[in-house]
Image 1 (cartoon, rainbow, N blue to C red):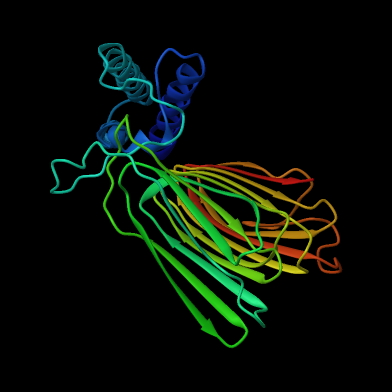
Image 2 (cartoon, rainbow, N blue to C red):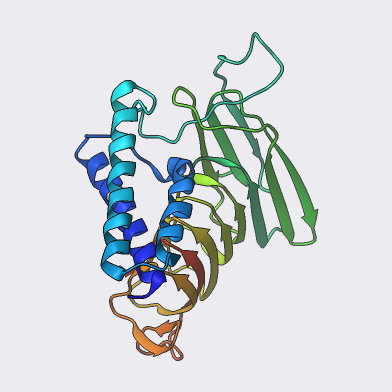
Length: 308
């Protein structure tokens, strides 16, 4: 038995059981706290490369997995991992003693400039819950609720292109009593480009009412749900993520091509033909009136593309 098979197999089994017990409400577990278990990966890798019989390695690896799950369960019972509200939550560290527990909302928006054909939205945020919730008459509306995590934005106009850059101003650390929930409304008239740099995030963008030309997303341990519509004839999607759940919906009549690499990631690509290693296409992709290209670089993630 190959060393890597033992290492990755038991790693996925361990994570799978943690999520199963979460669904059964025995423990609380989310992607955003997966980083706490990184020492287990080192232990499992050490077991995998030890010069021992394959059966012995398997027993040791499963024992490590069982002890990890048992330890996590005990932490849950003692309250170290109390189950919070399902939205991803955070704690902001700063030097102010009187504001650390203060919750505050933040909103801003900009009117739609004249003669704009293209718009680009860039978001740089460490972690949070992010959603695109619909359309608006303004160029964009931004709304944040939660702990005192601050955002700032800058807007630039260059001919028929307007660029919106939204940045997280303060550091956040995960905590059970704090939130960083961000929602957007966008104008449906421009052709949109998106550039998202997020960390541990719950990311849900329904883009079916928008003309999407280009979308780039760099994520950490994230839950990513994207819905792409049929309003633009060409859409390019680039996703780089690790330990994430990635779900993408595309129009059934669109031609779709998937390229890239995924290390030990589960794939659900119903309706796609395998062209070569790492390349999948829907039938008739080359002649389709709408073409969607997805470049994916994912490690230890689930990846699903649905045609709807």
